[in-house]
Length: 194
Image (cartoon, rainbow, N blue to C red):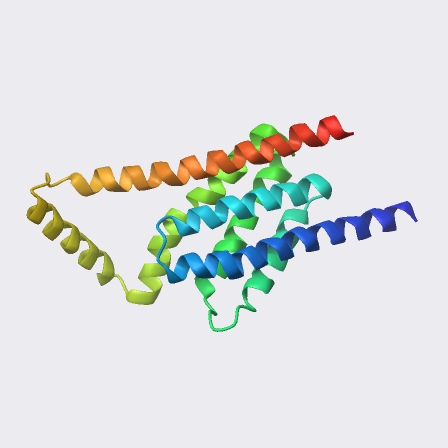
């Protein structure tokens, strides 16, 4: 009887946190996409990873993080007029990364920091894979040519694009570590609340 109650409690928590993430993805993520906000994928991954960590803290069993991610992806699919597979795939990958970290290493501050950082860094390969799938391999040549033209116009050194990519990656990592710090604070608060 107690095991059934624990299972129901776990399902309720994963559903609530997953639905919350899905709604945030639907509305805030859709808005950020519309205005072409920079680092929107990493920002949404940061929000989502904190919610996934909170779900796992409440339902500490293998699969809970993945279940919350599945709920978020399902809710994100319901966005009217904004059906996009990219964000849904991102949600699924981020949930899988966090699930792997938390299942292999347990739930704690360091694990939440690592999981959140990986979830936000996922946006980097996601960007390249999505662009390759939607626009073909030639899109990267087009990007590099545009960068070369901007470098020439502004008189920037030839390798300047590498610095831009490094700053872009560092911003993803910073967002992930910030999300991890918030999730780690949840762990500390959860332990003090018990």
